[in-house]
Image 1: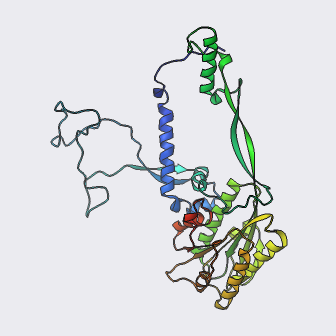
Image 2: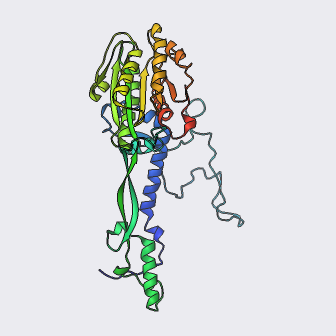
Length: 382
């Protein structure tokens, strides 16, 4: 291996492509954040099980350059001798894009569509989500992997070189030899960062997904419920290891189904929500002692429940709240009128009960942040 020397060149010129790439990625993330509500409810990505890419609009990323002024009469190119760096010499006067009546003559902002993979989308969406109220005192069997840079070695790949420690080693060696500290860098000065995967143990978690599959749940309602649960499952499996999931479907009767049946199977008949709450309660009492487990039931329905069953629902939900960290209730509405079931649930005075209403597919994101946000201020009830 040849010797290394310290160069005093302007390295920013060599990093131009990298800087542009980073700038592009920041723009992509910014565009994803602005369009999260619409992007995560894209039917294509849900039906393709996350394998499809989606497109988001991003403002054009043009480099700074001189542009010919076709309207020369507005301003000329020479200065008056009093200008300084940063002064604006002139601007085009535009009325703004997309405003006014009739066809406009003013230029608009350039946009293009960038394809975003499921991984990029999940990274932005899941960044601020977590299972709320995790009790660390419970049996720590839930693992969450993380990478920690915790050592420096003399051998490694150049991509992991620790520049600061390498230069320090070179300076010390050169100083001992009575030479300029930055005389040169030799292979023996090289230092490389190393890492290891750390298993962070968290408490056990059980998530119970409950969905209304009765006849009153139309295509829109089922699509919204499945979209929420799709992203919920992806979030849990991305950020946590060994989360136990139960999938319950109900009409007037409730039953436990497979994950595939939960997301594809249709049903019919009336609605008795108490049936699924009773089944969830039985599963918890038989298998999951709240002393050892963090428990999270989530239910999505259109709220079209048998009126005589509402009081029983309130009773069972209050029982569930004795076992659960939170209970999430989502109601999908096509009108501005709330259901009698929701009216009954509003009487529940327990901070662990969280409810959302969804009238538009973009509000699926609101449901996710209400149930899983790190920011407790976003976890509002209805």
